[in-house]
Length: 214
Image 1 (cartoon, helix red, strand yellow):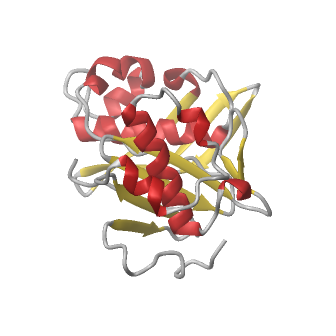
Image 2 (cartoon, rainbow, N blue to C red):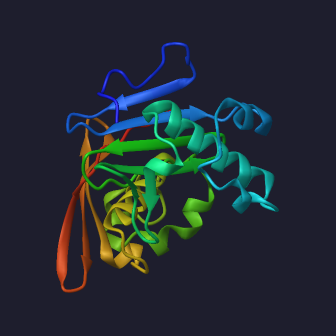
């Protein structure tokens, strides 16, 4: 893995980055290119593209753009990473990756410790499913049962998705077993941490988050 600060070629203006104080780095890519762009941009022999045969075009482009972003940001190929069924990507030799897609965006988190990353565009569907991923206390903290702001719901959903990925355990009940610490500061909600209650123990996770307009 290249040192932080040497990961991004200067010729890629559409690639955005966030570097957090614990060394975790986030890379965002707006998927504006066609499938042939990605197929021609790098050597795909190590990525097993046969798994994409018959996949929906959006699924194919999500796959290609995220792996292209991974390679562009870190120099890694399919031979350098593995993925367990339940957990994040593992970098052979040390390190962790987590990938997410939403709308026209794909993103990648790179860290020296287990990491979960999620990005989510605003969606009215979150209002419908809110009772399934937030418990009553969390909904109240976000403004009450009937007046949740969509951007705040989006933040809470993404935080729980990220924790779910980092915890690497299938079947967690989001509303009951993943609990967010929600704070209101300077007019907007912050979620500095979360806890997972499972297997007769509690695991704590630090959360870093950011927002764009959409």
